[in-house]
Length: 103
Image (tube, rainbow, N blue to C red; front, side):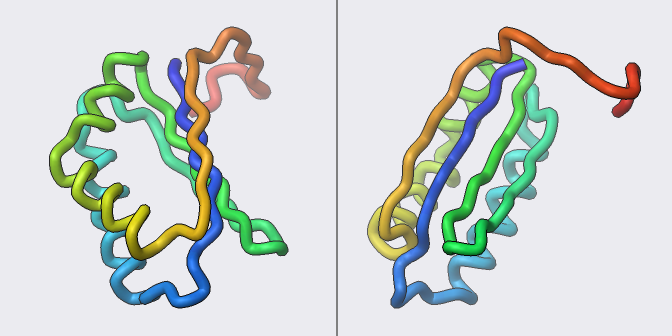
């Protein structure tokens, strides 16, 4: 498993409708990518958002990064949506689960 963690803060002048439409489309598009496992997004009380996506392996995550529509929306994110962001990614080196076999 390979995780991608995207931490971000939105711009104060964010067009919420445009952002929401792009975010929904990106989730749908990611779910259709080979090797996609799951996606979760959490918003902290201070406004920071942490979005985590899981992929079968690094090649699958890189495939998502190279998706043309995703690349276009990433550019829009830098120009219009995010005040700041940080991306972290890497393979999972340890995994514990309770109960065992949970989907």
